[in-house]
Length: 442
Image 1 (cartoon, one colour):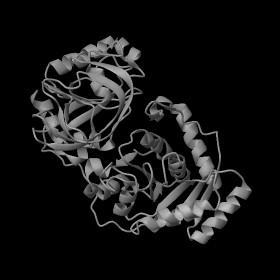
Image 2 (image 1 turned 120 degrees about the vertical axis):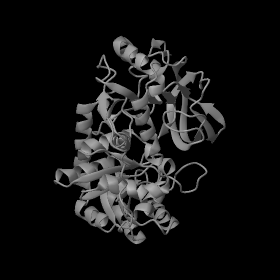
Image 3 (image 1 turned 180 degrees about the horizontal axis):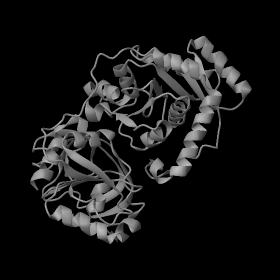
Image 4 (image 1 turned 180 degrees about the vertical axis):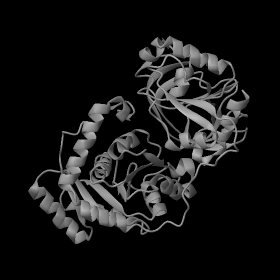
């Protein structure tokens, strides 16, 4: 089932994560999914279910991969819960329904549970729900969960109104302040940065959902989902050969990654070894390639800078020609400095915090040959940051951004590919193969 809402801030994450945890507590194998490019919510989903949180992004991966990627993640599970993004019909700007929760629900043939912020309204809730239920006949809203309900009297008024609208109420959650999910400049603080508190927050979400929702009715609704004719996605395997160690940055400073990237690298012939740039003073033994994804290095700039042995090891590896794929946070880490703190110095660029939020999907093309793609390869990406890198592109840029604006962006030098764009390699599976092959030949 898909958990959607009329707008952001309605309570999707609380309801979706709470449902995942509540059903997992029953001993069910629950597959967690998130619509869109978001990295943070899947971290909480993983805590709730004990399984990797997976993204379903029709812009980054294409609509044709949504069902296969879903089936891959949900293989062997009893139930799948998909948390939507923004308002139910909101997607990529100027692209109609593309990448919206509604589109993903249709592609999965899944019923939708609409989470409505019911504060400051009563009978009007029926008009709101009726509008969402009738806007697109291809989307099946199977029920409503009312959030931020003030009292028993308020709940009775809401239920009476929705009975006339013909949409069942599957839950009513009271206003609650006990669930602590703090935010900062890019949204919620990732679960990996606040492990104990995050576990407590997920438990509180589960308790709130158990108390306020009809779990049996919700499970019955999920069982009504249509059958998908697609085959599960599988990462394409490479020809047999020597396996190469690819180090992947993790820990509190580098929490953004897609589960499929590790699976693609493994299938391509890599032994993926995680390391924490905040704590480890050396790269994993035998490292032949390096992947540094997104995260919050700006929050940990002093600690990252203080780990001088690792900064030197990263610089030596990169300057020796080994393949390095760095996205957003990884780009900042490779710069000479971040907010005045020395970083790895691989790139002749400086990074700093900015008050301006850069956010949105990007349509890009590889400017030249690099460790991820040959020149001319088209990829779609997503930018989400409050930092600036100066200069914004090297002598050999990583991408030519075609939409929504026209510019070059990022850096390609020797084996380094560094860019602000987050990409999903499942859309271009040759990227992992190309990267691992470069590990063998560098």
